[in-house]
Length: 194
Image (cartoon, rainbow, N blue to C red):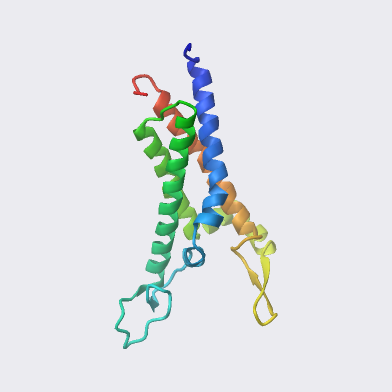
């Protein structure tokens, strides 16, 4: 079979990776990520808690950590599962079509997605960026209303149905473009081994 032109090869690989990264994001955020991880990943503070999130008392005998540490652990757990799924799917899809992405390229793309995913999901950077771009009004206006077990309504700024979640997903998908482009370039650059 004749070799495709380099441009065609790059566009095909870029499109494949972009589709894989972009379409896996909702799966990893809503099906792979655990409920506790999702609810804890934006925790900040110096209050002492146990690994299960319960407040620590002065006479606690179980190990404790700050709420910020619990939040960082939760986001690390989410990003680890997200990265495993992304790597497995990227390898599976490209190999199914008879293509081999170089390990360095694959790991670099995954590192771009993982590191930015962690920063965005912790929340502080997303909120900072929203302030810088004038999106805080959007976040405040588009909150989700929840009905608790007692029939009372509450509003939630970060969960499903909120502007926060839409801005979060938009950032992840935009970064996925960069990750797919870098992965493609590293795989197809002159001198790379395939």
